[in-house]
Length: 223
Length: 223
DNA sequence: GCCGATGTTGGCCGTACGGCCAAACCGGAG
DNA sequence: CTCCGGTTTGGCCGTACGGCCAACATCGGC
Image (spheres, each protein chain N blue to C red):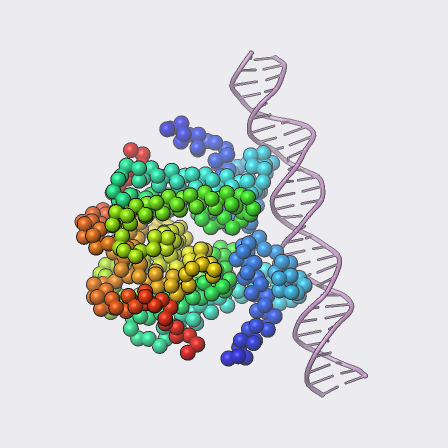
């Protein structure tokens, strides 16, 4: 295991990928030059070309490493638990920890896949879909076990949750007053229990049900 | 009013901004060339330069128009209502409608502000902060009126909600089976009532409370 | 019908990018 | 010591970018 760690740290390839991830995150893929990446990795542009023939191949390698990393972490996190609801929570915490761990590659994976085109893009979409399908499985199990309210649209729940969670990568700061686990726990409570008070819950139950039954009934623009 | 509409449609400046927004959304700011923008707007590069001296000024104008548009829409939507909770809901619907209306500028505003640097970047951050402060006000009022559970962290609630909502711009498709209002309503219900069943709610209440009281207690990596 | 202002044209310029390569370098095997 | 494959070097090349401009078109006001 220390061998893996050392290999990861010393492998020049990984040094390059780390440097590229940091730059892609800070400036975006298209706005980053291969010269900058080489300089950040402590090598010359020619050496970078020897390891990664094109800038795109660098991005692909970066993203594949990131999705492998995330998938493995979440799988490991839930592996030792059988309770469907607790598995969800453990996966959520693991995802959040990976996302906010300072691994810029995850951020790049989330927000830079537009920079890929053609085959590589489809490959990445496929990988992402596999990751999302894994989450759908977790949600489906929890719903099957009766942990979720009836009528909860699982695909919408996943989309909203991914949005809320992944957005944290934009505002989280290691110097902030919340740890990744605290953030994950707060989200878990919000999503699980809702934010309405018992008061508002009962007082507006018909209104809420009504707005569900007749969505979009209210338009007060262009009166 | 038809005058405004016509002006908006015929103003060559706006035609340019619309074309630029579509391209920035599809390919990103740095990966889009001014020649492409000019071609999409039906003019030559030189004419584009006459209207916007630099590509960055184009992005800034685009974003300012977008944030003005969004701010006005949300303000209008809640203007006619006094109930704090309903104001929240109306604002949410308006925000979602703007976001998914096909106005690429909003998308660009959300995901391309990294491309700005220096003064313009700070200006945009300030504008965005004003928009977020407006939402904080709505949330604060609702909490003050007793509509929200005690102990709900309003700033976290806003961050999570913005994440979930804005992420919809990534997956929403006009050809999909859900309208923006349906999506907004679904989110409103999720966030308001939570997704846990009464069963899981009562069965795990201590566990949930525990994970709230001692966040991050669970670590099952590196055993 | 002239005139100034507003807008357009098409091409030019300096720059810096991504990609490439021939030569040099290095460390370990024989 | 020699050799050889893997690796690094530093610079070169074609391209296409953002920005610029002088000449030209258009058109409403007088």
